Image 1: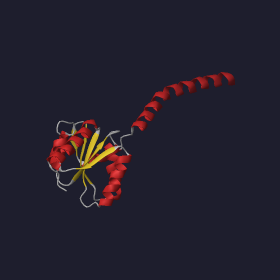
Image 2: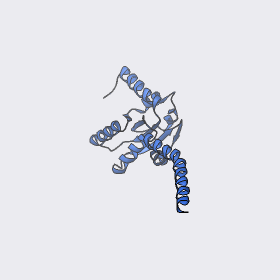
Image 3: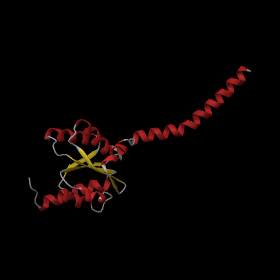
Image 4: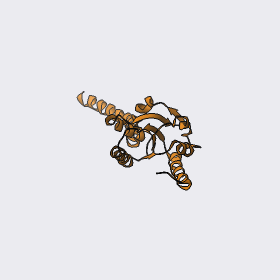
Length: 164
């Protein structure tokens, strides 16, 4: 269904708001996916904190202008959907990567993070980034390790003295 000028402006404003807050973005070609498959992808995106939008390329270019995802503009060609990671940098990449494993029609075109656009080959690297909770867990284990080692050392010294 064709949008009038006000509808187009509303779409651009909506996407621009999410682009301004997002950690990373993925542009993927969805040609060949059924409506049911796209609905499944959208449902999973909502559950994982990813903003997913099928948008015309000219509107997408206007929406990302002035954001760190402006670098994607030259690659926005063909029928694309854009996924923005809102909670952690790897969430959109994990969504697209996992969905593409079972649906070969979803083809990643652009991966953007930190103001730089990368090819589809970087999708796996971005998807492997830990979530916020995983990152905090890793940090806590690193912080806890020296204390644990100190306690084990003191216990070993105590055990040696008791044995002697």
